[in-house]
Amino acid sequence: MNANWKQDPRIKKMNPQKIALLNEFANRVERTPKDQLMTTLLSLNAEASQRGIQFNDEETDLLISIMSANMTPNERSRMETLRMLSKNLMNRNKK
Image 1 (cartoon, rainbow, N blue to C red):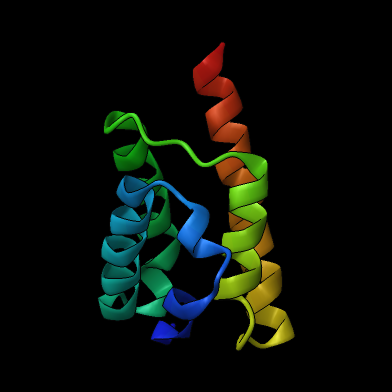
Image 2 (image 1 turned 90 degrees about the vertical axis):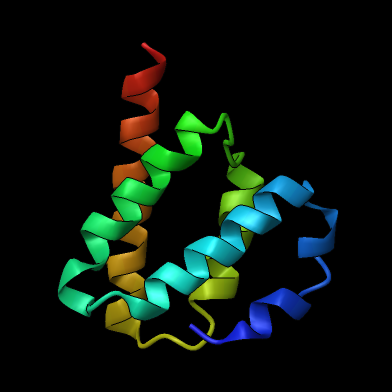
């Protein structure tokens, strides 16, 4: 993931805590081998929850569009799958 997402004007509307978490997330993802990406994303989601940080649907859509801008169709598909899994986990935790 390149750092161009940081320049997106829509990011500036987000809470600074969320932006800091995204920076941390981006740094971890860059160092993560592709075969371990799913595990890393799920652990980051859990960590955000523990910190009391949740992204609403609009923010999540924005993040997905920014992060997937330079991805191949296959990578975008995987990203969408991860998003759905994350959403299911969040819904399960709310019950």
